[in-house]
Image 1: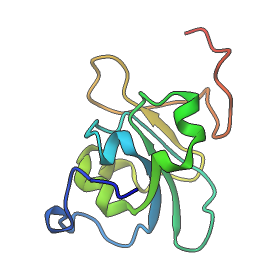
Image 2: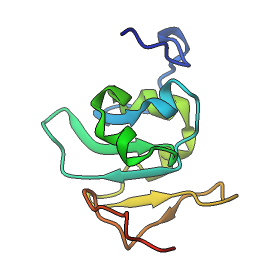
Image 3: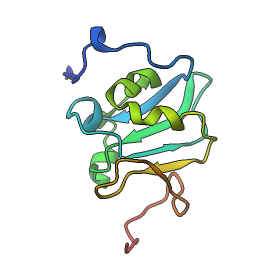
Image 4: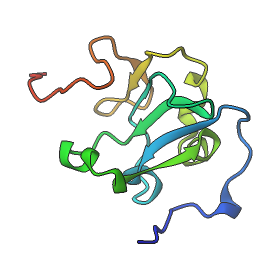
Length: 122
């Protein structure tokens, strides 16, 4: 199935360079939600930055379907949501989120990539 991205190739501007690839969900690139959760894990290969970007509205079932995300240049996701740019030099293991009405990312210290957070009671 052909995906219809919110931004066209002609709308992507060079905001940042040389960050490599990342994974972002369709809730960002197709539905147009802002990035509200981002983390950096060990890269899968030499082209991968390790960054993963989510809107925060993805269910576990949604995340388990690889068709609901894609591989992009980090610059592409910066065009969708420039608020990620100041955090891109953060080290592997970094986790950030925007919660509630908050428009600034804050560091998350109680979550690790791959953790199942079904049992969390916030």
